[in-house]
Length: 134
Image 1 (cartoon, rainbow, N blue to C red):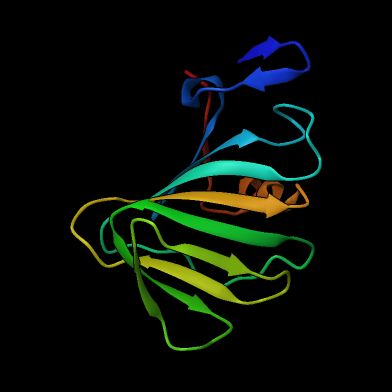
Image 2: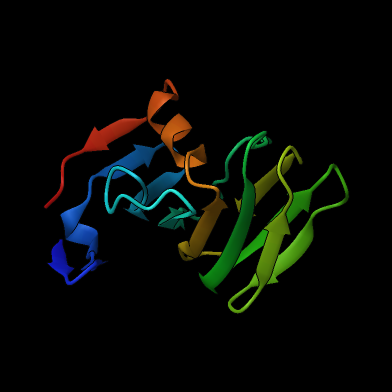
């Protein structure tokens, strides 16, 4: 991580990886990484055939952007909708949602939580393995 003036440039190797049986996430912007409290930002990889359980973020809105791969997004217990590269999903705070990789390659996502803080819960999940930066 390099600080330039009042800002930061953060690369994936600068931050820890939160690894799960469904894939991994790297939080590139959060109060712990850059000091930003307005929003957090990260990269997610969902492995083929994997997804995360239905959950909500009671104190944060979430935006998910699909960079590559194929999947299904469920929001608010409605039938899952196919998503792929270029799809943007907005999940209001407190709304149940889940994402599933339905393709043969990793589903790569960008996630934003506003305000920052919802990402901190990930470290506390029982299936989370924290891999140090590098």
